[in-house]
Image (tube, rainbow, N blue to C red):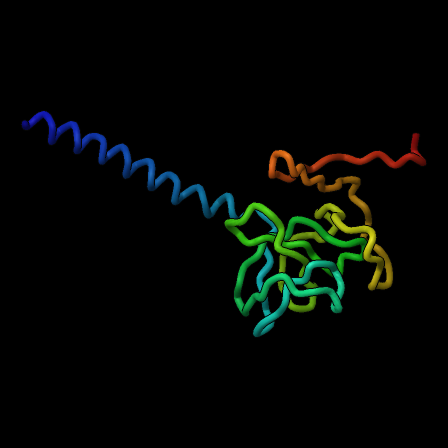
Length: 147
């Protein structure tokens, strides 16, 4: 019977060490993502990067979101929830704060059109969503004019 307690205590120590390691590494991983914080009292995340587009979600002051893409002029960012896998829609830059370079995000919408004075410089990276595998991939796209 005494051996059972030692066995259980050893496994509990290993489990606690694993749990602490996970808690330490998750915040470090979260900081490397393109996090945006909502600064407006409330705002809509929209289905398309336009003010007249249908809302897809509501967000509130101090909510954190992860930017996964941008439109051509960089005035709208495509976002997902921190624990989510898929984008929930588009949010306008006027209602968020962020510390990363917008040009580092891939252009994930080039059909809605420009609203700003000029487009953000293209990084040559696009986001392809693979529906069959339910995941997004970053891919380099080739400009046919450069061939």
